[in-house]
Image 1 (cartoon, rainbow, N blue to C red):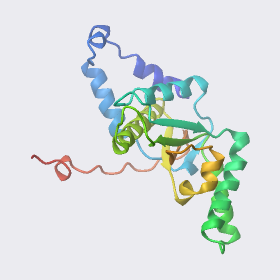
Image 2 (image 1 turned 180 degrees about the horizontal axis):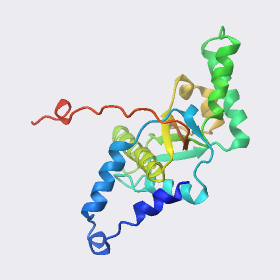
Image 3 (image 1 turned 180 degrees about the vertical axis):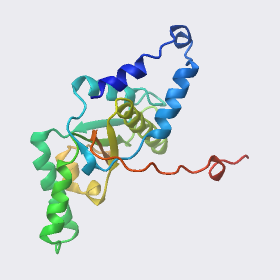
Image 4 (image 1 turned 90 degrees about the horizontal axis):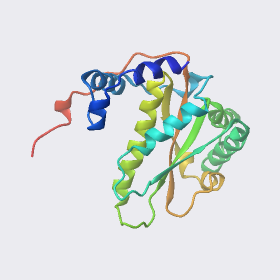
Length: 215
């Protein structure tokens, strides 16, 4: 499923320019189209098949190319395999009950169901504790965001859909325990990747003039 798009994108080669760190006009155009056409797809619409092991490695290599001041690698990703989805479902449910002891059975079941969406599901963990060199936590969060965006774009290039999901459960002690988060680590969001069962109309992007100014 993902191979056709992948072969197409990798068919644009210009060794001379690549040696100089540049891109051909065709590659540049593909990159712009890839970035501007990516959509956030609801996990409910992400079905099998998901990325195979080789394609998953490509996602992680894309993350590794993110800007990283100090070469700290201030991110890590924890995959939730099928056999561990029930543990995550229980964590979602108990985290909800902790916040709202009066939650209905329907609300609890809805919380549990979130753990079973998307073929590839992983938690994004940001490393924001003390480090050397002492790169500010905010700057490290920018690196984390870039790593995540690289993965989303890589998935898009392979014709998969993707999305980010979060919620109040991210701050639950139960979530920290399940994913064995260490001091200084924070659960940021989940990345969901899979085949798109139904696409939505693309959103209108804001005009650059609305967010760019001059000093």
